[in-house]
Length: 333
Ligand SMILES: C[S@@+](CC[C@H](N)C(=O)[O-])C[C@H]1O[C@@H](n2cnc3c(N)ncnc32)[C@H](O)[C@@H]1O
Picture 1: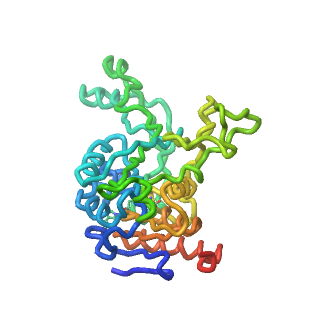
Picture 2: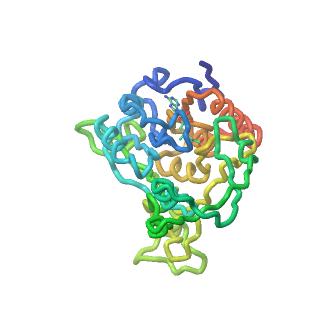
Picture 3: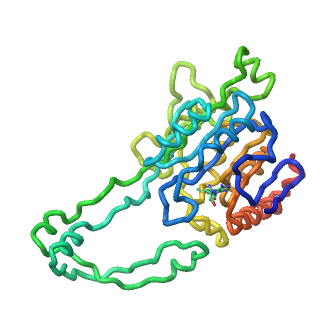
């Protein structure tokens, strides 16, 4: 176990988050995290199960009353995660959708399986380049390309099922917006005065109007619309682009960063700005390569992060050190 600290503003730990023993109760303003989804994404060993719900109790204890949280999830298991969060006494406030066009449906060609079951040889219809998927420490494996036969069904039943699949194209990732209840028997204003928590930072996250767009509403705000619960990645050109646009990050945006579920810093900026004000503290118990932490450094928020895997922890440190050098951050706040 090791940890790394730049003064008291950023502290990251290379250990399991369970217990959050380093954090005092009621000391953190916001929780922003992308935990394991429990779907064995790309066979990653750490994604086999959802986190034990004990961690959400730990987070509740560390958060100040009224503190908000944004927790990424998957469409398949968000309901379980939401129950875990609710059972841990968080209030479910919303589900934001981070919409994107380049999600890949998980599927297989059942028509070929049918041929095989029936003992029929499928037809070769061409060749294609097969790229071996990501393995831990295996970014290089993307260079392993093989030529493979492209097959088509030959049985009657196989032909009937040609092109069928097991799922629809995933076009959004849910982000569950939660809140620790404000202190009992006081108002939201009193909670804000006492703890600095209880409200969302709508002013800093307004979405600017499109170029040339006439302002909307009777009394339009000069800085744009209130941020909606749909965050888009690609330009869809259907009118909805007014709301929000965040480009999806390349898997290996920086050559040393092989984290398979890297989140765009720009997306994290939006969440950090929405949930906190400058000099407030953000907790990410499942930080991976520290996209939340990078955003906090840039936006002058304090950050506490935990990462169990030593390789990812080293990547997080390297990213943080790069940003510190790039922006001379310790002198910034
Ligand atoms: C979905 S990834 C986060 C990726 C991150 N959003 C990024 O941009 O790099 C979840 C991370 O949680 C880590 N993890 C899993 N169990 C953990 C635990 N008990 N304590 C700390 N980290 C854990 C995994 O190693 C993985 O890196």
